[in-house]
Length: 335
Image 1 (cartoon, helix red, strand yellow):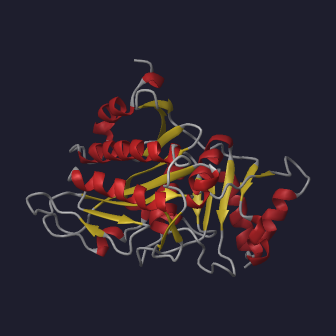
Image 2: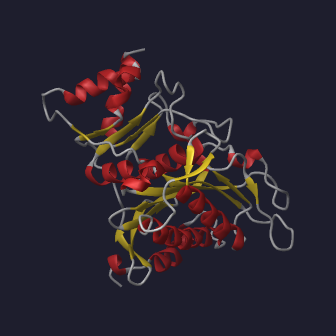
Image 3: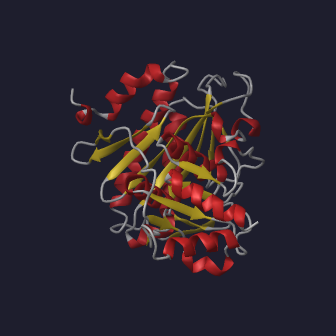
C-alpha cells in the first residue's frame, strides 16, 4: 500500500510494536482521540449555524471565559476516554482538578493518564479561525490497582509516551508522536477517515517566520525585545515575516511546515507566561523535538521542567532549532 494512502487505523496497527509497551492500550487511546476529534470537528464546522458559539457564561480555573464549544469538546473527549476504559486518569485545562477513572468492575488497572487542552484557541471560534485539541499521554507512576494521584500528572515532559494535536482548519488534521517521529493525518470528511498525508514531519532547521503577540511588546523581557528587533533588521536573510494567529495549534502547525519560531514569553502582564506546561507546552515540546525542532522556556528545555501544579504556566519558545537557539542567545545576553 502506498504510504500516503494509509489510514490512521492501519498506521496505528503497523506501528504498535514500536511502542515501548505494546499491550494495545496506547493504540486504543489514539483511536479514542481520533473518534472524539471527528465528533468535535463536526460541531466546529457547523458552529456558525447553531447556538454553540459564544461564551458559556462560566469561567474555567484560569478565570477565562469558557466558550460553549470549549465545554462541549471537553465533555466529548472525557466521555469518549471514560467509556472505553483505557485510561486511569484525565486532566483537562477546563477542569479544576484531575478526574479519576475506574473500570466498570471498580478497578483501577489501566496504565495511562491523559492531559489535554480540549479546544485551544477558542477565542477564535466565532471568527472562523483554526482551533485545535492538544493531548499528552503518560504512564502512571502510582501502583496499578490504586486510584491515580496528582503524582501521576505532575511528571516532567520527558516521561511522555505520546503527544499530539488536532487542528480544525481548512482541512482537519491529527498530528501525533509516540517518540518515533511525527506523522500527520488528514480527515476525508466524505467518509470520515483520517489518511496519512504528512509522513515523518520535520521542522526546517531555519525559518523566516516569528510568531509573537507584538501588541505586548512593551511588557516583554529585554531579551525578547532584542530578538524581535533582530528579526526585523534588514540584513542577511532578514527581516523575517511576522505571523501570529493567537491559536497555538495553528501557529505551531504553520511553523513546523514552513519554518519559524513561536514565542509566548513572560511579561509584566503575565509574569509566569500564559501557556500551561502540562496541557500545551509539554505536548508541543515533545512533538517539536521529535520533528527536529526545539522547545525551551527561554533558558532551559521545557520537557525537563518538574511540574508542581496542574495548571502551571511557563514561558514558551518553540520551533525551528536554530531560531530557538538564537532567541535563547538574546535571552542570556540580556540577563
